Every structure is written in C-alpha cells, then in structure tokens.
Length: 376
Image 1 (tube, rainbow, N blue to C red):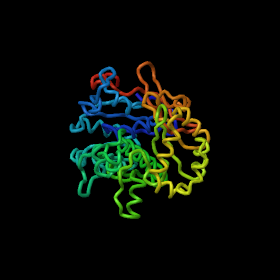
Image 2 (cartoon, helix red, strand yellow):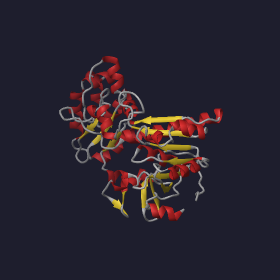
Image 3 (cartoon, rainbow, N blue to C red):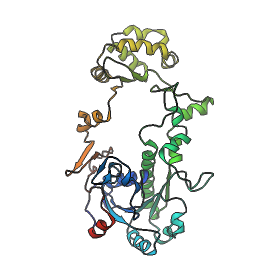
Image 4 (tube, one colour):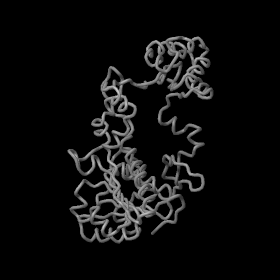
C-alpha cells in the first residue's frame, strides 16, 4: 500500500535495502521530504533493532530514530524468489539505497551493472566503509573506526589527554547526508540524460572531508595538529570558559566581536591590549587571554551571561545537556521535535522548505516479518 505524500520529493519511489545508520539516515531524509520509501530488511531484521537499551515495544530506540516515513518489508535476497520480488519493486522505483558488503549483490546477480542493464533510469546508491576498490576496498567500516583512521580522533580531546571519539556518530550521519546529496544530483542529471547512475558515499571519504581546518593547515605547513580540547586551532577566544554556574562557550572570530565581548564584560581596556589587537595575536597569546576571561566570567551566571553576549552580537552559548537542548524554547519554536501519535517522538528534519516542508506520515516499521507480510 502506497501512502499518499506531499513534499519536495513527492512521487519519488525509493527502495531502501540498507541497515545500521548511514543508509537508513539517507532514506529517512528522503522520506521526510515526501519520497515513498520502502525499507526492505533481511529476515533477521536490521541489527540496530537490538542496539539498546532503551527499547520501545521490544525495538531499540536507535532503530526507531532512523526509520520513520518508511514502509516495511522483509526479503532474503539470497533466494531467487526474493530477488524476483525485488525486480518487481524496482520496475517503477527511482532510487535504490544499499550498504551490502562489496561483492554481495554481485554474487546474487543484482549488482549495479546487472540492475543498470535492466533498469537504466535507476539511481543506485551504495553507502560503504571504504568504497569498492583500492587497498581497503570492500572492507567493513564503522563510525568510530573511521574516526580513528581518518585523523578525527587524533585531534579530539584535551591537550594532555588521550585521543577521543567524537560522541555523536558524525561520520555515519555525514555519509548519509552525502548520499542524499549524491542522489539528488543524479536525479537532476537524469532530467537531461534520462539515465540513472551509481552513487557512492563512503565513510572513509566522508571522514577525510570533515578534517577542516586541520587538513588545510597540514597542507600549508606539514606540522602535525595538536589536540586543543574545546579550543579552536586557528582563532581565540573560541573555547569553553567556567562561570559561576554553567560553563560558557565563546566563539570570537573577528575584531568587532572581540570589542563587543570586552564591552559586555565591562573590560574595554582588554580590547586595547596590544597582545590581543588582532586575531593572529589573540591566537598566539591565548594563554594570557584565557586567564583574563576566566577572571571576568568567574562571578557571572552562565546562561544569563551567554544570552546577553549573544544578543550583543558575540557568538556564545551555555553548555547544555541533551535534555536541556531538546527542551529549549528555541527547539520548540523551530519545530525540531516531532511526535506521531502516542508512541513516537524524534528530532525533526533540519531542512526547511517554504512551500514543500517536511512531513511525518509513517511510524518506523517495527513489526516482525509475519506482521509485515500480513500488512501487505
């Protein structure tokens, strides 16, 4: 059963064979904006169904957060009958998303070349760890291992501490976003050529693409970057500072913002100090500048001070936990929390379109294979 939809991608038909994070996130982005997405899982289900706690009705919240706006089906694609069903589904599909290990779909006779010959307009998107070829081609990659290998982990952490994984799976999610971008590019090109093409988004490539400014700094001077905690490698003050309550993040990128910061902290003489006269000098003399700002902020209430600075034109923020961020008044104003019925609450699409906004139509397909079969 196809659910009528609205949105920028209404009418687009997507078959999502992917599991875990990058591929499912890509499919959810497309579904949020109107695409008809059919998620096809193996008989044992997407493994993230078990990645908990917490669980809702026996299904991990991890899975639920990546699979709304999708219909559900189970197929064992190692079986010929299941592949025939897939062919039927692809007959009027626009996009196929998959993240099978390289060679798996080819072994089953449904690799890109075979599908392109049968469905020349199909956009075939593969999300992978390292891509299909090269020294690491076809090998398995997870977010944290890619953070380690691409250098992200090496620059994350305190200067005197160990390298740290970035707490959110930014490589997986950014790879999903790159997959969306690639799919939309291929769809646009198809309006000219009438042909589909292969879209590849790998975690390894994405991890490297996220290294700015450390990569460009290294290209310029070949000096290995050092971990700097919450501080920026190039500019200062761009760091977390203690206050009388919650810590405050300051992100000062130019002379005007620095002058405004000093004015708001009742320390205009600080902006006149020759040690801090330019962005370069503030970065070179960051230890002295940090000491001065720590003293100025010591007796100020963090949330109130951060908002005062922000309203004055100084990029700043209080350090909030997840609960406070999700319950922030601006979060509500931006419509960034979505509910469906009594059972689903999630983070809404961050992509805002004026005429064709995102919509939330389908709960994640959490049913068992038997329930999915009966639903059809």
